[in-house]
Image (cartoon, rainbow, N blue to C red; front, side, top):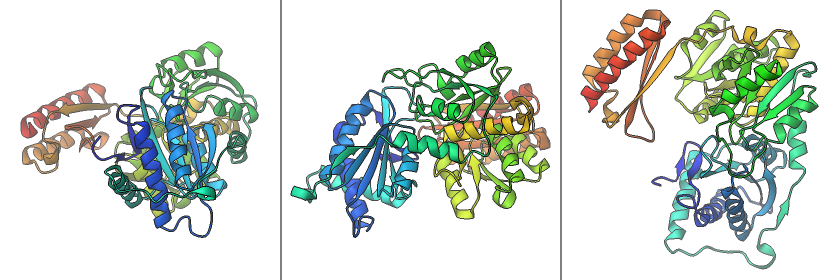
Length: 452
């Protein structure tokens, strides 16, 4: 698997890359590293462990729980809950560590392990690096210092986690959802119970699809990566809007009453205006990434809201928000972070807040989302090139300058190297889709010739 920790924990094909042995070993290593860092000083440590419904999550959960308990950590199993729920419970239960087993929007055969620090925040990069180092040391033969007798961890189920998380979601809503009809696509994932319960308790009439997880059907033709079923269901049921989550429910995409997609940029635009109106948008700033649609940037400029852009990845959005004290950020893919109420992207909370804005204003989602015009965006992946030279090639730089001159202020160009594959991503936005395709195609050809 190369380096174990990526931008969102450890992921791989369950029982091939991500084995029970690896899950157990990483959990023991995490306990030892946090103990060395002083996290457990003066008290008996506790961890919250949750998972999505994947079949492999059952044995991986058992391995993680065994590893933590064998290292002297008491474990609270919360069962199948969204990633943001595990983060929230880690914080409110004052646990020393949170562990979520999920591969998010990936297909069912994959799974992953994500660790949360005290407070429900992502582990610092240096702690992840240390966990990986310690794991490798002990995997190759150095014995663990293991507690015995009363020193071993105790394991218990924390059934109250579901209600505590749903109560939290309802408690932070600015207004109820009475009178709204909402279709929820749960991707047969971790929010299959949570999201319908939260929307119903908030007053909405709820129709659910993709809410029957069997361990094998997670993300299968449904959820935020496959909006076709949601589009059709919203129109069929005459709903006001539809909400789609991914497998671990840290994302939210939406569909308006006509079945048209409302993406993460549009959701951010709607929430930014709502939060500014309520005096909650600190420094009148929203955080996005370099992949945010130019239409979003232009809309925020028009509305007097500053857009700060980071590298692609919700971890970078969160880092910027925490460093500068911003309240709202996210990605086009539907990772939306409302930092006053969550430490990570929370798809259910995002959907609730979007629906609350519709209910409060009496305006349709299409009208609210119309605050920004999404410019056509074309993305071409150019494989088998030397991606390390994307920022140093004179030939490529000249081609980009020429393309930017052609597009003017109504478009833009972004070239970036993939973090996981030997390819360069060419992204072009323009007011006209045909122009975007033509410019992107020409740039892709230059990438092949200059970096091939």
